[in-house]
Length: 226
Image (cartoon, rainbow, N blue to C red; front, side, top):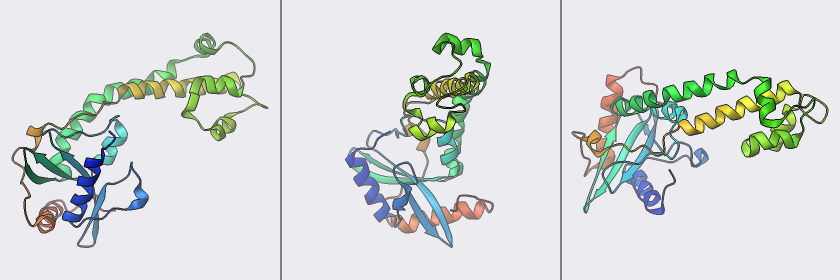
């Protein structure tokens, strides 16, 4: 989900408050911030909320599950004039992430299985029967999902595509469409999920490091370092 300026400002303030750092090469879809501690570099997901529940992302799917399973989380609560923060280790966040993973798993399995069932006769109903399909034919199917270079690389005939290659493009489009329909639109983490978690209201950087060290000591095989 796109962040607003207030979210960005609060996250920048969190980075300073907890003595984290941001790798500017990560971009908008990368890691929000990192913590250097005892020779390790720990990736953090930063979130803020003024409503209680925490918003996540616009299109939650398997990529986010993979991205978040080993992340540490830092959440800023700005509710009714009160400001505090909570730290969530990977194990503390795992119940919510695993629950969402199970929820979307059947749909993404469909996205894997259904395209394989599409045959040439099905394709002919969609785009017509030809010996050679053109660039425009392919673009009518995949639209802006491929860059021009990729369209040209996929051509297996002089200036075009064979029926078998067009079938591959049709299948790829079908998988994309099912996967897009299978993502969750900004699933919220309910306020109650964080009940009982320690509120950090002072000595922020020091307390965060204490909590992270406790987690790392209990999970010697932790793989969250970069």
